[in-house]
Image (cartoon, rainbow, N blue to C red; front, top):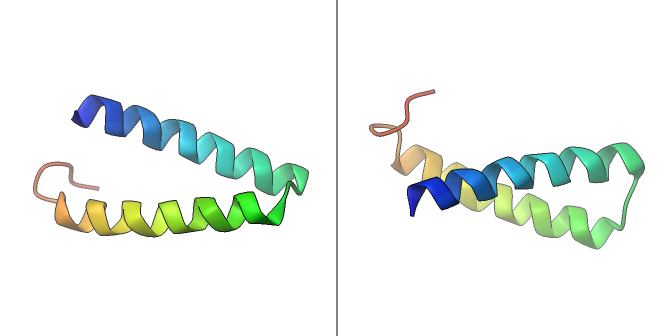
Length: 52
């Protein structure tokens, strides 16, 4: 479960950078920003497992 989540996070980061550099569809960037907000909540919750 955690492995899948980390893998999804890595692909999300790549997609976010790719979309920003190529000025892709703004709706995609908005969606990814919402996903990153969820990730930040998870990261704060999981800090004791995965320190920065």
